[in-house]
View 1 (cartoon, rainbow, N blue to C red):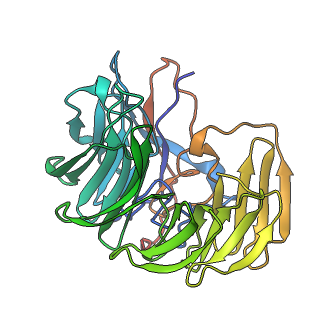
View 2 (view 1 turned 90 degrees about the vertical axis):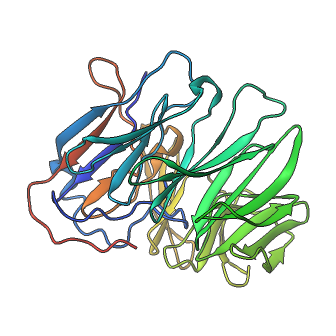
View 3 (view 1 turned 120 degrees about the horizontal axis):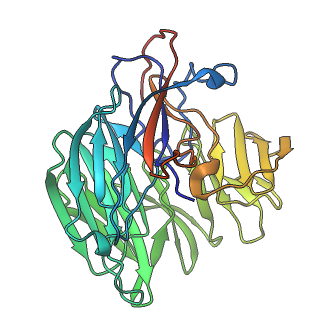
Length: 357
């Protein structure tokens, strides 16, 4: 079954477009916009379609469809040939970026950084020794500002404090975390023997290596704290004071981002699907959804549902007031013609503009 790239919501046409710069909203990967006030359980059922754009297909491609990102007055969506920038208000195409060889470019991870769109991906012709690349596009024109080719793949990417941080490994490439300056792609630092989960809490990035977890400053690579626990960090709180991570024991743990101390542990709650609004921590699985108290880790509520999740489709939290991604990347079946499309929805009530972080 083919799927749409994303579903977007416009609450007020003509307002300045706010930022949803990462698939999980921002570098904290919390899947929560603290400035949301319009999309609520009472209003979400009244959204209506305002535009839909067909996404590019090609017979042979390693790329595809993923969570869109929003920033610099553009909606950016991947397709089978590259990336397209749309006008969020009307859905008109502004520019398209096309891979030289779609059959040898994997699906890019995207992040908006000021006036740049960062693409992190690689080739797909070698399973044992893949290569990676970083490409910075001008958000206004789609032209490449800078490009970096790598001998190792790119598995994760996060942009924070004007730094692009990536990590990756393969059977032929050892673990390594590398940081580049957003403006020009200048190498800032590298840390062999570590990997990143792609989460940053106000510039503090947890890295996992052979000796456990080390939190570093994203700008310098200097260590802030370390622990022998190899935590797989899934998200950080909107206030950037907690990491939420899966532990080897199967517990979900809340970790102080400043010290590395465990604030609470929820046994058997580990999951790759974690979101938080600062008040609750939401954990999803094929069995349903669970909410934990963010301060204590105690169960707030749990719902068993007869549904299935696909990739990041389970993300539950609200997005921007003027323009929003429902569940951030809510996958829906394609239209009657079976073709993928990007669909925008709207509400008729006029609302005040929001402030994007």
